[in-house]
Image 1 (spheres, rainbow, N blue to C red):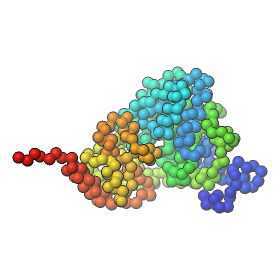
Image 2 (image 1 turned 120 degrees about the horizontal axis):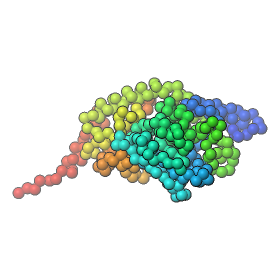
Image 3 (image 1 turned 90 degrees about the horizontal axis):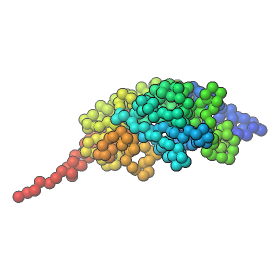
Image 4 (image 1 turned 60 degrees about the vertical axis):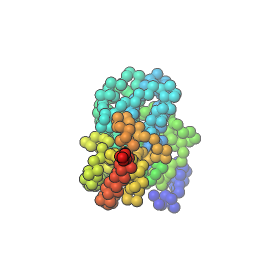
Length: 370
């Protein structure tokens, strides 16, 4: 990225000089690198500021065509990221019917629920590739199969699996795909929406930002060339190293599970369907806020999505999974990468065990003396 901060400062949209030409060449190279991960054409990649903007463009960008077609039924799920649920809520305020499917107790949405919900007037189906809080992988191949004879547009928020679990993302039945660069160790502030053609026909998207003809008229604004270039290389590296990175994450997971087993965690999410680098669990007798404070000098953990941590509210994902309120109050989300160093599990377990002892001691009723 550094040369495009310091030396190559051309605007990719400038066509009259060499500076712009070199910037355009770099952007097109990055477009190819991102497209390679999901098996699409370079012209099907629309660069955005991240998956949140891509989700908004996919959902709200389809509104005019859906309204014109008289098809205002949209299917999604109760466990989607807020970057999907909130644009859907806006679509609902504009007169569309939003149907949110409930998950199984293990944290995944059964394809039969999708099949049962489909109608002739269904315009859009938006279902994530994997949940950001629990790491539970969703069966998007089976969703695509359920949609094989239906014309509804299929949007997948793939922020959690892009560059990690790539094969399902290459399904031609997926019309729209949202990704973020920082999820594959690229720079923050850039992402993409894949707009896969059906034959020669693009999804009938309308822009939600106005002021220029960039990205084939779908996303106004000067492209941040350094960020795009960084995204491209990060995507290529993630694609090339996917299995090696996953193996390292699985090894770390085994270490984590073994170390924390004495604390009898209540795991949230089907362990047979989970990403190797995310784990969500509650520890009986422990409050998540107190646990995070106790652990902050040892490791960084959270009690939900980073996107909602500024104003904590109980997890809508765990509630949809029918997790008890007590367990939700104690839920912690652990996540790591192939580069995460070993941690002092003995110290972590000791700290949590001490916190639990103090919590149960303070909560214990005092016997009346005579």
